Length: 376
Image 1 (cartoon, rainbow, N blue to C red):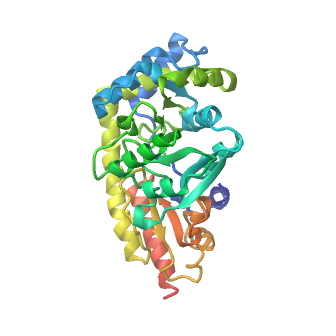
Image 2 (image 1 turned 60 degrees about the vertical axis):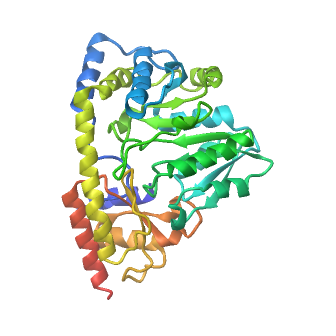
Image 3 (image 1 turned 180 degrees about the vertical axis):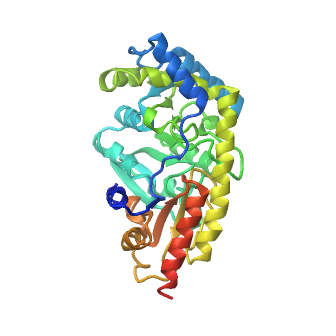
């Protein structure tokens, strides 16, 4: 966010800044969603909804799981939330007690550990390097489990690395957590944005898993603040009480609009955009390698590349934080240093978001290449 503020200040001064730092698609909501929102406003569907969400949307999400993944998820298990952040807050409020410990990979999305600490828990970040695709392994979970460990919080696909968890490995993790009476929370916010295989859900592994999802990424509804949780049936009343007290409900207009996400027209638009993102990834990964970055794990989801900067030709190559500022000031390219995401070799990595137009990505690579050539 500090880099974003500096980038905005430079842009306001007249500099052309290419933003590869923010995890927000450059697409807006599909036209059917916008039309559905306008219709909801005309109908006056703007009042409070049920705390768990409007029934039609919960049913639509349940149908989506049946059609896309072949998994039967009862609509009663689905809680519509004020964004995925609201969903993660609810999950931590319901499941984390003071002193509890949650295991998660290092690197991870920084807010996840803050959600845990907000309810008195502790996030224990387990170094998860390129050899295991920047994801927790079953061996990690088994070896690191302690008396105060409550469970795991995983993300697939992941921010910042864009990697997914191997399905068999995820199954082993779930078995280990289940055997210890713990909870498995899986952040599936980038579900749908996968490029080398079909999208998957942890819900195929049992009814005791909590998954968090969002309309922000695949459906490009970031500012609409709409997400959902799938929880075990017996836990839904606790989530309902928390929602009533903390949020009342998610945005009524956003909920009615989101019904259109599951129409054939909207899904076709989103699929075309997914292919556009894949094309950006397929350009950016080899382009970064060509100018001196190492990409030790090819991202297969989301819209991020986690790149090792230690080999680039620049005085700041050994400090990703310093390099990120140099790229911004000297090349007009904004990227995020690994310091945001954990403590395991964070100064080796920069996160590049390719959620911006391909011509701008090409220009960003050209600018960085020109800068690095000055130091060769």
